[in-house]
Length: 227
Figure 1 (cartoon, rainbow, N blue to C red):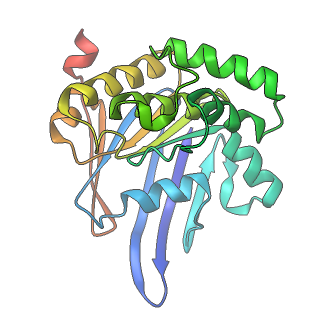
Figure 2: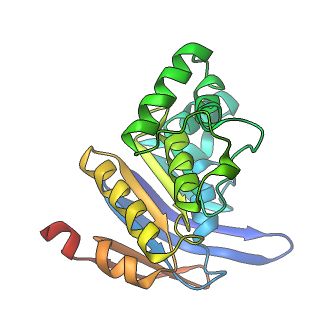
């Protein structure tokens, strides 16, 4: 479970990014985070990953107060979280397999085991080009590689910041279907997005931010759940 208790974040000298956010997210839920640019979506994701620290309030993940973690605790927290961005952030000189395997190697998995895991995950996501370089792939394929990289350490939580922002509608639907399969497997997903069509179709819970405040928290049954 994720809990934010009266969380605020202010950047120097006096720019509030989040103001008094209190919410909870149960394990295995698929949550959309929406709002206009500058509403605080990316800041909230950074706080969950401990890339930023709150100015006020507490953040609990699995009953652990992440705001009090030291460096080793932050490293352990991050191993349980997968990140997906609008920019794919793939290393162009590495192959697809190497890009994905690297995320496992940096947490201590042997190179051989990491490569085996990378190939398996890529196949599960429909990618049969492990030796290709990222720039040889389409945008949709590159985003699937980025998702594979996020999944290789078997995280319980995926944080995605505008993951379909650079994709056409058809490819965006493909990425959402991958996320639905992850949710069905018990993964918790928090997806920041401006895409209202995808939010309406797939959002079982929608958190709306405006000027740093949580202004709406909507739960509903969606078409995706009814399928």
